[in-house]
Image (cartoon, rainbow, N blue to C red):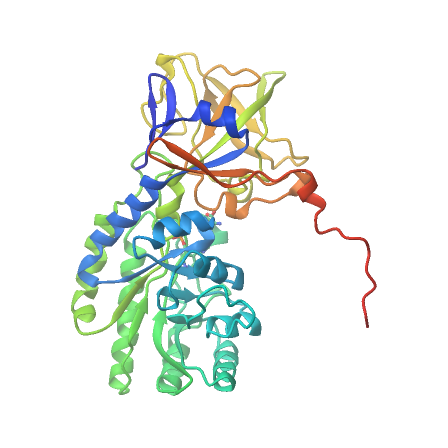
Length: 445
Ligand code: LLP
């Protein structure tokens, strides 16, 4: 699952004792394990090897450039959804031919950059990307017209909305019929028929993304079946679909052993696609959370233990501004002290552990909002001011969704590799907060 383990009551990330790390770098800090990141990628790649897929890590889940580099060094591609993510992927050394670009609101500038026209950004290789994942007909037309003007040749897939409800929360169920993403299969068929052979933007691929944290193989199987029906219908129309991008959405173990393994996802999907892939259909995967979630913990310091009647609040220096998932989706993250007495070493990660002397606590942050919590009614060992807590499975959608709300500087990020720990993003300072708040300048109308 990951390389964060207790040894004699002390939490280690690979070979690094996390209480020592926090003493040096302060809190709140996101800590990632390189071995977990690359181990996840390697196991996913091995499970799906029969399809020889292009694996494009979803940058939005954890976008630090050094995290991207460690994956890019294994040959991993990237799934990006903005010009900012495209720049990160390129800076991390990912070649254009391994980048796919999704998102419902691509701007002209972002499109031109992706086609290889990032004028002025010469310090990075700006070769054209592998594929635009197009969300609508007007978007297709805009990309095609920009490509024509630039005399470039782009490749596109149309995002198909398969009308399948899946995902850990309504906010991340993107494949449902009423969501803003993609087009219905019939419309996709018409678009591919019209534009498959268009010189400047060939639209001959199908893109799917059902939702996030789907701990069941059935929705993927159903979606792939629907995509294959569409591919067959197009074959009858005389059009060959060249790529099938399955998107992301595999679950991660927020609680121990609760999500399918890569082998289980592959066992369900590879048989459906093996012959197609052998016949030339390019398979693309866009995993995010399943690679990065368990590769990261968030370290936070207890500021106060506050007793209000029967209620015990553990007030810490991380909160909804550092990790918004509990506040936004009601998500579960295992929270545990980084140093505990032997009887409190957690046997596994779960909402309730049957250990002696635990007391229910609300773990909350410093932000002035009632939604500012990391855990509620969570039985925890006794805690005191100054104790260090680890919030587990925080690598995905943690730092990448963090904000400066209430004017808290963004946390530091550390990457552990064996017994070495390196700061990969320095902690912001209070001065950083006002850096862009310049002396007022007149707008030159
Ligand atoms: N591909 C596309 C087109 C996506 O929209 C996403 C995620 C992914 C791939 C990666 O999905 P993953 O493998 O990570 O599930 N903030 C939410 C998750 C939002 C996911 C958005 N799209 C959370 O914290 O749960």
